Image 1 (cartoon, rainbow, N blue to C red):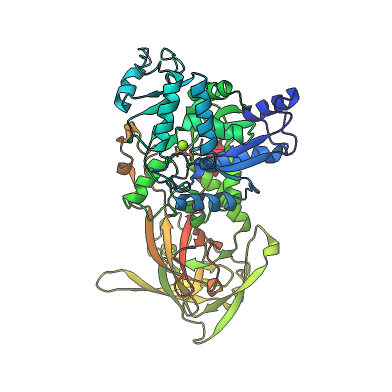
Image 2 (image 1 turned 30 degrees about the vertical axis):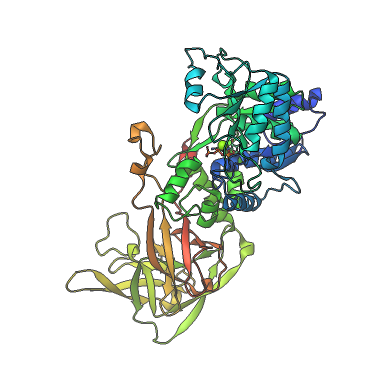
Length: 562
Ligand code: ATP
Ligand code: MG
Protein backbone atom coordinates (compact mmCIF):
# COMPACT_ATOMS: atom_id res chain seq x y z
CA UNK A 1 0.00 0.00 0.00
CA UNK A 2 1.13 3.57 -0.61
CA UNK A 3 -0.02 7.05 0.34
CA UNK A 4 -2.59 8.56 -1.99
CA UNK A 5 -0.59 11.30 -3.70
CA UNK A 6 3.08 10.47 -3.67
CA UNK A 7 3.06 6.73 -3.99
CA UNK A 8 5.64 6.76 -1.18
CA UNK A 9 6.15 3.43 0.55
CA UNK A 10 4.00 2.94 3.56
CA UNK A 11 5.29 3.11 7.13
CA UNK A 12 3.43 2.56 10.38
CA UNK A 13 2.41 6.24 10.67
CA UNK A 14 0.99 6.40 7.15
CA UNK A 15 -0.74 3.11 7.91
CA UNK A 16 -2.50 4.71 10.87
CA UNK A 17 -3.52 7.69 8.73
CA UNK A 18 -4.83 5.46 5.95
CA UNK A 19 -6.89 3.58 8.52
CA UNK A 20 -8.18 6.82 10.07
CA UNK A 21 -9.16 8.08 6.65
CA UNK A 22 -10.95 4.81 5.93
CA UNK A 23 -12.95 4.97 9.16
CA UNK A 24 -13.46 8.73 8.92
CA UNK A 25 -11.94 9.26 12.37
CA UNK A 26 -10.97 12.87 11.72
CA UNK A 27 -13.47 13.42 8.93
CA UNK A 28 -10.74 12.56 6.45
CA UNK A 29 -8.64 15.53 7.56
CA UNK A 30 -4.87 15.31 7.98
CA UNK A 31 -3.34 18.15 9.97
CA UNK A 32 0.14 17.85 11.51
CA UNK A 33 2.53 20.28 13.14
CA UNK A 34 6.23 20.74 13.74
CA UNK A 35 6.58 22.08 17.31
CA UNK A 36 10.16 23.16 18.12
CA UNK A 37 11.04 24.69 21.43
CA UNK A 38 13.04 27.86 20.60
CA UNK A 39 15.93 26.98 22.92
CA UNK A 40 18.53 26.15 20.30
CA UNK A 41 19.13 25.77 16.58
CA UNK A 42 17.51 22.99 14.61
CA UNK A 43 19.59 19.89 13.88
CA UNK A 44 19.40 17.05 11.39
CA UNK A 45 17.14 15.13 13.83
CA UNK A 46 14.64 17.96 13.61
CA UNK A 47 14.88 17.71 9.83
CA UNK A 48 13.56 14.17 10.13
CA UNK A 49 10.56 15.41 12.08
CA UNK A 50 10.06 18.37 9.70
CA UNK A 51 10.15 16.18 6.60
CA UNK A 52 7.81 13.69 8.24
CA UNK A 53 5.20 16.21 9.38
CA UNK A 54 5.25 18.46 6.32
CA UNK A 55 5.68 15.46 4.04
CA UNK A 56 2.64 13.65 5.40
CA UNK A 57 0.52 16.79 5.14
CA UNK A 58 1.54 17.23 1.51
CA UNK A 59 0.98 13.58 0.60
CA UNK A 60 -2.55 13.57 2.00
CA UNK A 61 -3.56 17.02 0.80
CA UNK A 62 -3.52 18.18 4.43
CA UNK A 63 -1.91 20.98 6.40
CA UNK A 64 1.13 21.32 8.64
CA UNK A 65 1.65 24.11 11.17
CA UNK A 66 4.90 25.55 12.40
CA UNK A 67 4.43 26.08 16.11
CA UNK A 68 6.89 27.42 18.64
CA UNK A 69 6.48 25.52 21.85
CA UNK A 70 7.61 28.50 23.91
CA UNK A 71 6.37 27.60 27.36
CA UNK A 72 9.70 27.91 29.15
CA UNK A 73 10.73 31.58 29.41
CA UNK A 74 14.19 31.04 30.87
CA UNK A 75 15.88 29.20 28.01
CA UNK A 76 14.18 30.71 25.01
CA UNK A 77 15.38 33.47 22.80
CA UNK A 78 14.30 35.42 19.76
CA UNK A 79 17.54 34.47 17.98
CA UNK A 80 16.42 30.83 18.06
CA UNK A 81 12.95 31.68 16.74
CA UNK A 82 14.49 33.48 13.77
CA UNK A 83 16.97 30.73 13.01
CA UNK A 84 14.23 28.08 13.12
CA UNK A 85 12.03 30.02 10.70
CA UNK A 86 14.98 30.46 8.35
CA UNK A 87 15.96 26.79 8.53
CA UNK A 88 12.50 25.31 7.93
CA UNK A 89 12.01 27.68 5.01
CA UNK A 90 15.42 26.80 3.60
CA UNK A 91 14.53 23.11 3.76
CA UNK A 92 11.78 24.06 1.34
CA UNK A 93 8.74 23.54 3.55
CA UNK A 94 5.83 25.92 3.77
CA UNK A 95 3.52 26.58 6.70
CA UNK A 96 1.66 29.27 4.70
CA UNK A 97 -0.10 31.48 7.24
CA UNK A 98 0.04 28.91 10.03
CA UNK A 99 2.88 30.12 12.23
CA UNK A 100 1.81 29.78 15.85
CA UNK A 101 3.21 30.26 19.32
CA UNK A 102 2.14 28.23 22.34
CA UNK A 103 2.42 31.48 24.33
CA UNK A 104 -0.51 32.85 22.32
CA UNK A 105 -2.64 30.22 24.07
CA UNK A 106 -1.60 31.08 27.64
CA UNK A 107 -4.99 32.68 28.42
CA UNK A 108 -6.89 29.72 27.07
CA UNK A 109 -4.65 27.24 28.90
CA UNK A 110 -5.23 29.15 32.11
CA UNK A 111 -9.01 28.95 31.60
CA UNK A 112 -8.76 25.21 30.98
CA UNK A 113 -6.81 24.86 34.23
CA UNK A 114 -9.55 26.70 36.12
CA UNK A 115 -12.05 24.33 34.50
CA UNK A 116 -10.12 21.31 35.84
CA UNK A 117 -9.91 22.84 39.32
CA UNK A 118 -13.67 23.42 39.28
CA UNK A 119 -14.20 19.81 38.29
CA UNK A 120 -12.08 18.72 41.27
CA UNK A 121 -9.37 17.41 38.93
CA UNK A 122 -6.57 19.78 39.85
CA UNK A 123 -5.22 21.24 43.08
CA UNK A 124 -2.69 23.70 44.39
CA UNK A 125 0.13 21.96 46.23
CA UNK A 126 2.36 23.78 48.74
CA UNK A 127 4.98 21.03 48.86
CA UNK A 128 8.44 21.97 47.64
CA UNK A 129 9.84 20.49 44.44
CA UNK A 130 12.03 18.22 46.53
CA UNK A 131 9.09 16.97 48.61
CA UNK A 132 7.00 16.40 45.51
CA UNK A 133 9.82 14.34 44.06
CA UNK A 134 10.04 12.24 47.22
CA UNK A 135 6.27 11.73 47.31
CA UNK A 136 6.22 10.59 43.71
CA UNK A 137 7.75 7.21 44.57
CA UNK A 138 9.57 4.99 42.08
CA UNK A 139 8.78 2.25 39.61
CA UNK A 140 8.77 -0.15 42.58
CA UNK A 141 7.29 2.07 45.32
CA UNK A 142 3.92 3.63 44.83
CA UNK A 143 3.61 7.35 45.43
CA UNK A 144 2.15 9.13 48.45
CA UNK A 145 -0.55 11.75 48.36
CA UNK A 146 0.26 15.30 49.36
CA UNK A 147 -1.48 16.62 52.46
CA UNK A 148 -2.78 19.46 50.26
CA UNK A 149 -4.37 17.10 47.75
CA UNK A 150 -7.87 17.32 49.13
CA UNK A 151 -8.22 21.05 49.43
CA UNK A 152 -11.72 22.34 48.70
CA UNK A 153 -12.31 23.63 45.17
CA UNK A 154 -12.85 27.19 46.40
CA UNK A 155 -9.50 27.26 48.15
CA UNK A 156 -7.77 25.89 45.06
CA UNK A 157 -9.40 28.52 42.87
CA UNK A 158 -8.36 31.25 45.26
CA UNK A 159 -4.76 30.03 45.55
CA UNK A 160 -4.40 29.55 41.80
CA UNK A 161 -5.68 33.08 41.20
CA UNK A 162 -3.15 34.40 43.70
CA UNK A 163 -0.36 32.34 42.10
CA UNK A 164 -1.20 34.04 38.85
CA UNK A 165 -1.43 37.45 40.49
CA UNK A 166 2.16 37.14 41.63
CA UNK A 167 1.59 36.85 45.39
CA UNK A 168 3.93 33.89 45.83
CA UNK A 169 7.56 33.38 45.18
CA UNK A 170 9.13 30.98 42.67
CA UNK A 171 8.81 27.34 43.66
CA UNK A 172 6.52 27.95 46.63
CA UNK A 173 3.45 26.34 45.09
CA UNK A 174 2.38 24.42 41.99
CA UNK A 175 -0.86 23.42 40.35
CA UNK A 176 -1.13 19.63 39.97
CA UNK A 177 -3.51 17.33 38.19
CA UNK A 178 -5.39 15.03 40.56
CA UNK A 179 -5.01 11.64 38.94
CA UNK A 180 -3.58 8.66 40.80
CA UNK A 181 -0.54 8.52 43.09
CA UNK A 182 -0.52 4.72 42.81
CA UNK A 183 -0.45 4.56 39.03
CA UNK A 184 2.26 2.27 37.65
CA UNK A 185 2.95 5.10 35.16
CA UNK A 186 4.90 7.79 37.02
CA UNK A 187 3.67 10.44 34.62
CA UNK A 188 0.16 9.87 35.98
CA UNK A 189 1.10 10.49 39.62
CA UNK A 190 -0.44 13.92 39.92
CA UNK A 191 1.85 15.68 37.42
CA UNK A 192 2.58 19.39 37.80
CA UNK A 193 0.59 21.59 35.40
CA UNK A 194 1.81 25.05 36.41
CA UNK A 195 4.83 26.36 38.23
CA UNK A 196 5.54 29.84 39.54
CA UNK A 197 8.33 31.58 37.66
CA UNK A 198 8.84 35.31 37.86
CA UNK A 199 10.61 35.51 34.54
CA UNK A 200 10.20 37.61 31.45
CA UNK A 201 8.96 35.75 28.40
CA UNK A 202 10.28 36.60 24.93
CA UNK A 203 6.75 37.26 23.70
CA UNK A 204 4.43 37.80 26.65
CA UNK A 205 6.87 39.92 28.63
CA UNK A 206 5.88 40.13 32.30
CA UNK A 207 2.22 39.29 31.82
CA UNK A 208 2.63 35.87 33.40
CA UNK A 209 4.44 34.60 36.45
CA UNK A 210 3.01 31.09 36.17
CA UNK A 211 4.05 28.93 33.24
CA UNK A 212 2.48 25.70 31.96
CA UNK A 213 4.47 22.45 31.97
CA UNK A 214 5.10 20.67 28.66
CA UNK A 215 2.72 17.74 29.22
CA UNK A 216 -0.15 20.00 30.16
CA UNK A 217 0.48 22.48 27.39
CA UNK A 218 1.29 20.30 24.43
CA UNK A 219 -2.00 18.48 24.01
CA UNK A 220 -3.89 21.74 24.46
CA UNK A 221 -1.83 23.36 21.70
CA UNK A 222 -2.61 20.44 19.41
CA UNK A 223 -6.29 20.55 20.34
CA UNK A 224 -6.64 24.31 19.84
CA UNK A 225 -5.06 24.05 16.38
CA UNK A 226 -7.23 21.11 15.35
CA UNK A 227 -4.23 18.83 14.79
CA UNK A 228 -5.28 15.32 13.77
CA UNK A 229 -2.03 13.39 14.16
CA UNK A 230 0.40 14.68 16.78
CA UNK A 231 3.66 13.01 15.83
CA UNK A 232 6.43 13.01 18.44
CA UNK A 233 9.47 10.98 19.44
CA UNK A 234 9.45 7.72 21.34
CA UNK A 235 10.31 9.10 24.78
CA UNK A 236 6.79 10.56 24.92
CA UNK A 237 5.13 7.16 24.62
CA UNK A 238 4.73 6.92 28.41
CA UNK A 239 3.29 10.43 28.41
CA UNK A 240 0.47 9.55 26.02
CA UNK A 241 -1.94 8.44 28.78
CA UNK A 242 -1.50 11.88 30.32
CA UNK A 243 -1.94 13.62 26.96
CA UNK A 244 -5.21 11.69 26.62
CA UNK A 245 -6.30 12.25 30.22
CA UNK A 246 -6.09 16.05 30.03
CA UNK A 247 -8.05 16.24 26.79
CA UNK A 248 -10.66 13.74 27.96
CA UNK A 249 -11.22 15.46 31.30
CA UNK A 250 -11.64 18.80 29.54
CA UNK A 251 -13.91 17.23 26.96
CA UNK A 252 -12.21 19.13 24.13
CA UNK A 253 -11.16 18.11 20.61
CA UNK A 254 -8.73 15.23 20.91
CA UNK A 255 -5.86 14.66 18.44
CA UNK A 256 -4.05 11.32 18.25
CA UNK A 257 -0.49 11.24 19.57
CA UNK A 258 1.82 8.92 17.60
CA UNK A 259 5.42 8.21 18.56
CA UNK A 260 8.34 7.35 16.27
CA UNK A 261 12.05 6.68 16.85
CA UNK A 262 14.24 9.76 16.87
CA UNK A 263 17.19 10.02 14.53
CA UNK A 264 20.57 9.14 16.00
CA UNK A 265 23.65 9.49 13.81
CA UNK A 266 27.04 7.86 14.26
CA UNK A 267 30.01 10.17 15.00
CA UNK A 268 27.54 12.89 15.99
CA UNK A 269 25.93 14.33 19.09
CA UNK A 270 22.43 15.54 18.58
CA UNK A 271 20.77 16.92 21.65
CA UNK A 272 20.44 20.69 21.84
CA UNK A 273 21.95 20.64 25.31
CA UNK A 274 25.16 19.04 24.02
CA UNK A 275 25.25 21.24 20.93
CA UNK A 276 24.92 24.31 23.16
CA UNK A 277 27.83 22.98 25.22
CA UNK A 278 29.99 22.68 22.07
CA UNK A 279 29.15 26.29 21.21
CA UNK A 280 29.55 27.73 24.69
CA UNK A 281 32.81 25.96 25.41
CA UNK A 282 34.27 27.10 22.11
CA UNK A 283 34.83 23.66 20.56
CA UNK A 284 33.16 25.03 17.43
CA UNK A 285 32.65 28.53 16.09
CA UNK A 286 28.94 28.95 16.76
CA UNK A 287 25.75 27.02 16.01
CA UNK A 288 26.36 27.29 12.27
CA UNK A 289 29.92 25.99 12.37
CA UNK A 290 30.18 23.72 9.31
CA UNK A 291 31.07 20.77 11.58
CA UNK A 292 27.81 21.04 13.51
CA UNK A 293 24.89 18.71 12.69
CA UNK A 294 22.62 21.75 12.78
CA UNK A 295 20.66 22.69 9.68
CA UNK A 296 22.55 26.00 9.57
CA UNK A 297 25.88 24.21 9.95
CA UNK A 298 25.05 21.74 7.18
CA UNK A 299 23.94 24.64 4.98
CA UNK A 300 27.25 26.44 5.51
CA UNK A 301 29.09 23.19 4.92
CA UNK A 302 27.50 23.02 1.48
CA UNK A 303 24.60 20.62 1.97
CA UNK A 304 21.58 21.27 -0.23
CA UNK A 305 17.98 21.12 1.03
CA UNK A 306 17.32 18.35 -1.51
CA UNK A 307 20.13 16.20 -0.11
CA UNK A 308 18.76 16.52 3.42
CA UNK A 309 15.21 15.78 2.34
CA UNK A 310 16.46 12.82 0.37
CA UNK A 311 18.35 11.55 3.42
CA UNK A 312 15.22 11.86 5.56
CA UNK A 313 13.16 9.92 3.08
CA UNK A 314 15.79 7.18 2.78
CA UNK A 315 16.03 6.59 6.54
CA UNK A 316 12.25 6.27 6.84
CA UNK A 317 10.41 6.07 10.15
CA UNK A 318 10.25 3.22 12.61
CA UNK A 319 9.08 2.44 16.07
CA UNK A 320 12.41 1.27 17.52
CA UNK A 321 15.52 3.31 18.21
CA UNK A 322 18.56 2.82 16.03
CA UNK A 323 21.63 4.72 14.89
CA UNK A 324 22.04 5.71 11.27
CA UNK A 325 25.53 5.65 9.73
CA UNK A 326 26.60 9.26 9.10
CA UNK A 327 28.15 7.94 5.87
CA UNK A 328 24.61 7.75 4.47
CA UNK A 329 24.12 11.48 5.03
CA UNK A 330 27.46 12.15 3.37
CA UNK A 331 26.49 9.86 0.52
CA UNK A 332 23.30 11.88 -0.06
CA UNK A 333 25.18 15.14 -0.53
CA UNK A 334 27.80 13.53 -2.77
CA UNK A 335 25.08 12.04 -4.93
CA UNK A 336 23.43 15.45 -5.33
CA UNK A 337 26.62 17.43 -5.94
CA UNK A 338 28.03 14.83 -8.29
CA UNK A 339 25.07 15.48 -10.53
CA UNK A 340 24.67 19.22 -10.07
CA UNK A 341 27.91 20.90 -8.99
CA UNK A 342 30.18 22.27 -11.70
CA UNK A 343 33.70 20.84 -11.71
CA UNK A 344 36.69 23.09 -11.50
CA UNK A 345 40.40 22.65 -10.95
CA UNK A 346 42.18 23.82 -7.86
CA UNK A 347 45.41 22.87 -6.14
CA UNK A 348 45.49 22.78 -2.36
CA UNK A 349 49.08 21.71 -1.66
CA UNK A 350 50.97 23.24 -4.55
CA UNK A 351 54.14 22.09 -6.25
CA UNK A 352 55.67 24.28 -8.98
CA UNK A 353 55.98 22.74 -12.43
CA UNK A 354 57.88 24.49 -15.21
CA UNK A 355 57.28 23.30 -18.78
CA UNK A 356 60.74 23.90 -20.24
CA UNK A 357 59.76 23.65 -23.91
CA UNK A 358 56.66 25.84 -23.62
CA UNK A 359 57.41 29.38 -24.91
CA UNK A 360 57.90 31.92 -22.17
CA UNK A 361 55.10 34.51 -22.03
CA UNK A 362 52.72 32.35 -24.06
CA UNK A 363 49.21 31.55 -22.80
CA UNK A 364 46.46 29.50 -24.35
CA UNK A 365 43.04 28.32 -23.33
CA UNK A 366 41.96 24.69 -23.26
CA UNK A 367 38.38 23.41 -23.11
CA UNK A 368 37.25 21.81 -19.88
CA UNK A 369 33.99 19.92 -19.29
CA UNK A 370 31.82 21.45 -16.58
CA UNK A 371 30.15 18.21 -15.54
CA UNK A 372 30.50 14.89 -17.34
CA UNK A 373 27.28 13.75 -15.61
CA UNK A 374 25.35 16.52 -17.33
CA UNK A 375 26.36 17.53 -20.88
CA UNK A 376 23.95 20.47 -20.71
CA UNK A 377 26.30 22.15 -18.26
CA UNK A 378 28.66 22.76 -21.17
CA UNK A 379 32.35 23.57 -21.20
CA UNK A 380 34.58 26.43 -20.16
CA UNK A 381 38.02 27.75 -21.06
CA UNK A 382 40.96 27.18 -18.72
CA UNK A 383 44.26 29.04 -19.05
CA UNK A 384 47.40 27.04 -19.70
CA UNK A 385 50.93 28.49 -19.53
CA UNK A 386 54.55 27.65 -18.85
CA UNK A 387 54.41 27.64 -15.04
CA UNK A 388 51.80 25.51 -13.34
CA UNK A 389 50.86 24.22 -9.92
CA UNK A 390 50.13 20.57 -9.41
CA UNK A 391 49.20 18.76 -6.20
CA UNK A 392 52.27 17.81 -4.16
CA UNK A 393 50.76 14.34 -3.66
CA UNK A 394 50.67 13.79 -7.41
CA UNK A 395 54.45 13.53 -7.59
CA UNK A 396 56.68 10.87 -6.04
CA UNK A 397 60.38 10.85 -6.52
CA UNK A 398 60.44 7.19 -5.70
CA UNK A 399 57.02 5.92 -6.79
CA UNK A 400 55.63 2.75 -5.25
CA UNK A 401 54.19 0.07 -7.53
CA UNK A 402 50.61 1.22 -7.73
CA UNK A 403 51.47 4.91 -8.12
CA UNK A 404 50.69 6.02 -11.69
CA UNK A 405 51.03 9.74 -11.33
CA UNK A 406 54.07 11.92 -11.98
CA UNK A 407 57.58 10.65 -11.21
CA UNK A 408 61.05 11.30 -12.65
CA UNK A 409 61.08 10.32 -16.33
CA UNK A 410 57.37 9.44 -16.27
CA UNK A 411 54.75 10.81 -18.67
CA UNK A 412 51.23 11.73 -17.41
CA UNK A 413 48.24 13.63 -18.73
CA UNK A 414 47.38 17.12 -17.47
CA UNK A 415 43.60 17.04 -17.48
CA UNK A 416 42.14 18.79 -20.58
CA UNK A 417 45.62 19.90 -21.67
CA UNK A 418 48.78 17.99 -22.66
CA UNK A 419 50.95 15.02 -21.83
CA UNK A 420 53.97 16.09 -19.82
CA UNK A 421 57.13 14.22 -18.85
CA UNK A 422 59.16 14.99 -15.74
CA UNK A 423 62.78 15.69 -16.69
CA UNK A 424 64.26 17.25 -13.57
CA UNK A 425 63.56 17.47 -9.86
CA UNK A 426 64.80 20.55 -7.99
CA UNK A 427 65.31 20.18 -4.25
CA UNK A 428 66.03 22.44 -1.35
CA UNK A 429 69.64 21.64 -0.50
CA UNK A 430 69.19 21.96 3.21
CA UNK A 431 65.88 20.17 3.72
CA UNK A 432 65.95 17.84 0.72
CA UNK A 433 62.39 18.89 0.04
CA UNK A 434 61.21 18.88 -3.57
CA UNK A 435 60.56 22.53 -4.50
CA UNK A 436 60.11 22.47 -8.25
CA UNK A 437 59.77 20.11 -11.20
CA UNK A 438 60.93 20.66 -14.74
CA UNK A 439 58.88 18.95 -17.41
CA UNK A 440 58.51 18.92 -21.16
CA UNK A 441 55.17 18.79 -22.93
CA UNK A 442 54.20 17.16 -26.21
CA UNK A 443 52.41 19.79 -28.35
CA UNK A 444 50.79 16.96 -30.32
CA UNK A 445 48.76 15.84 -27.29
CA UNK A 446 46.57 18.92 -26.91
CA UNK A 447 43.21 17.97 -25.42
CA UNK A 448 44.72 14.95 -23.68
CA UNK A 449 45.35 12.27 -26.30
CA UNK A 450 48.31 11.34 -28.44
CA UNK A 451 47.94 11.00 -32.23
CA UNK A 452 50.32 8.03 -32.19
CA UNK A 453 47.96 6.25 -29.82
CA UNK A 454 50.39 6.00 -26.91
CA UNK A 455 48.77 5.79 -23.49
CA UNK A 456 49.56 7.23 -20.10
CA UNK A 457 48.30 5.73 -16.86
CA UNK A 458 47.87 8.88 -14.80
CA UNK A 459 45.81 12.03 -15.22
CA UNK A 460 46.36 14.88 -12.81
CA UNK A 461 44.80 18.29 -12.27
CA UNK A 462 46.68 21.60 -12.37
CA UNK A 463 46.29 25.37 -12.49
CA UNK A 464 48.30 27.98 -14.32
CA UNK A 465 50.34 29.78 -11.65
CA UNK A 466 50.06 33.20 -13.31
CA UNK A 467 46.28 32.93 -13.62
CA UNK A 468 45.37 31.17 -10.39
CA UNK A 469 43.38 32.94 -7.71
CA UNK A 470 44.11 32.33 -4.08
CA UNK A 471 41.57 31.24 -1.53
CA UNK A 472 41.43 30.10 2.06
CA UNK A 473 40.21 26.52 2.02
CA UNK A 474 38.86 24.95 5.19
CA UNK A 475 39.19 21.19 5.16
CA UNK A 476 36.51 19.94 7.49
CA UNK A 477 36.30 16.44 8.81
CA UNK A 478 33.98 14.73 11.29
CA UNK A 479 33.82 16.48 14.65
CA UNK A 480 34.15 13.23 16.61
CA UNK A 481 36.42 10.25 16.27
CA UNK A 482 34.13 7.93 18.27
CA UNK A 483 31.19 6.24 16.67
CA UNK A 484 29.04 6.98 19.73
CA UNK A 485 30.50 10.13 21.28
CA UNK A 486 29.67 10.20 24.97
CA UNK A 487 28.88 6.51 25.14
CA UNK A 488 30.08 5.00 28.42
CA UNK A 489 32.03 2.39 26.47
CA UNK A 490 33.93 5.25 24.83
CA UNK A 491 34.76 7.09 28.04
CA UNK A 492 31.36 8.57 28.82
CA UNK A 493 32.40 12.12 28.08
CA UNK A 494 31.76 13.29 24.52
CA UNK A 495 34.40 15.99 24.78
CA UNK A 496 37.03 13.27 24.99
CA UNK A 497 36.18 12.00 21.54
CA UNK A 498 36.45 15.34 19.76
CA UNK A 499 38.51 14.98 16.58
CA UNK A 500 41.60 17.23 16.91
CA UNK A 501 41.88 17.28 13.11
CA UNK A 502 38.30 18.25 12.32
CA UNK A 503 39.50 21.48 10.71
CA UNK A 504 42.65 22.13 8.71
CA UNK A 505 43.01 25.41 6.85
CA UNK A 506 45.13 25.65 3.71
CA UNK A 507 45.83 28.21 1.00
CA UNK A 508 44.46 27.00 -2.30
CA UNK A 509 45.20 28.05 -5.88
CA UNK A 510 42.10 27.90 -8.02
CA UNK A 511 41.25 28.43 -11.65
CA UNK A 512 40.20 32.05 -12.25
CA UNK A 513 36.64 31.13 -13.30
CA UNK A 514 35.92 31.06 -9.54
CA UNK A 515 36.58 34.78 -9.08
CA UNK A 516 33.34 36.52 -8.26
CA UNK A 517 31.42 33.31 -7.50
CA UNK A 518 28.53 33.90 -5.09
CA UNK A 519 28.66 32.85 -1.44
CA UNK A 520 27.02 29.47 -1.02
CA UNK A 521 28.04 28.29 -4.53
CA UNK A 522 29.09 24.65 -4.66
CA UNK A 523 31.75 22.97 -6.78
CA UNK A 524 33.60 19.78 -7.23
CA UNK A 525 37.32 20.46 -7.15
CA UNK A 526 38.42 17.73 -9.51
CA UNK A 527 39.92 14.74 -7.73
CA UNK A 528 39.72 16.50 -4.33
CA UNK A 529 36.12 16.73 -3.20
CA UNK A 530 33.13 19.02 -2.97
CA UNK A 531 33.57 22.59 -1.80
CA UNK A 532 31.27 25.49 -1.09
CA UNK A 533 31.95 29.21 -0.76
CA UNK A 534 31.49 30.13 2.88
CA UNK A 535 28.46 32.34 3.27
CA UNK A 536 29.72 34.03 6.41
CA UNK A 537 33.43 34.76 5.94
CA UNK A 538 33.96 34.84 2.19
CA UNK A 539 34.21 38.13 0.29
CA UNK A 540 35.40 39.09 -3.21
CA UNK A 541 38.71 40.19 -1.66
CA UNK A 542 39.13 37.09 0.44
CA UNK A 543 37.56 33.94 -0.93
CA UNK A 544 36.84 31.25 1.66
CA UNK A 545 35.84 27.72 0.72
CA UNK A 546 34.52 24.98 2.99
CA UNK A 547 35.04 21.35 2.14
CA UNK A 548 31.61 19.77 2.07
CA UNK A 549 32.83 16.22 1.51
CA UNK A 550 35.72 14.29 0.09
CA UNK A 551 35.14 12.09 -2.94
CA UNK A 552 35.58 8.84 -1.03
CA UNK A 553 32.11 7.47 -0.52
CA UNK A 554 32.23 4.89 2.24
CA UNK A 555 28.46 4.40 2.04
CA UNK A 556 28.58 3.45 -1.64
CA UNK A 557 31.09 0.76 -0.63
CA UNK A 558 28.83 -0.53 2.12
CA UNK A 559 25.84 -0.51 -0.22
CA UNK A 560 27.63 -2.40 -2.95
CA UNK A 561 28.39 -5.19 -0.46
CA UNK A 562 24.76 -5.48 0.69
P1 ATP B 1 16.74 17.71 21.68
O1 ATP B 1 16.42 16.43 22.40
O2 ATP B 1 17.72 17.56 20.59
O3 ATP B 1 17.12 18.81 22.60
P2 ATP B 1 14.00 18.32 21.53
O4 ATP B 1 13.16 17.13 21.29
O5 ATP B 1 14.03 18.84 22.91
O6 ATP B 1 15.42 18.10 20.93
P3 ATP B 1 12.20 20.15 20.31
O7 ATP B 1 12.43 21.55 19.92
O8 ATP B 1 11.30 19.90 21.45
O9 ATP B 1 13.61 19.51 20.58
O10 ATP B 1 11.79 19.28 19.06
C1 ATP B 1 10.85 19.66 18.10
C2 ATP B 1 10.37 18.42 17.39
O11 ATP B 1 11.45 17.74 16.78
C3 ATP B 1 9.74 17.45 18.37
O12 ATP B 1 8.55 16.95 17.80
C4 ATP B 1 10.78 16.37 18.52
O13 ATP B 1 10.19 15.15 18.80
C5 ATP B 1 11.47 16.39 17.16
N1 ATP B 1 12.85 15.91 17.28
C6 ATP B 1 13.81 16.38 18.10
N2 ATP B 1 14.95 15.66 17.97
C7 ATP B 1 14.69 14.71 17.05
C8 ATP B 1 15.46 13.64 16.47
N3 ATP B 1 16.73 13.40 16.83
N4 ATP B 1 14.87 12.86 15.54
C9 ATP B 1 13.60 13.10 15.17
N5 ATP B 1 12.83 14.07 15.66
C10 ATP B 1 13.35 14.88 16.59
MG1 MG C 1 11.87 19.20 23.69
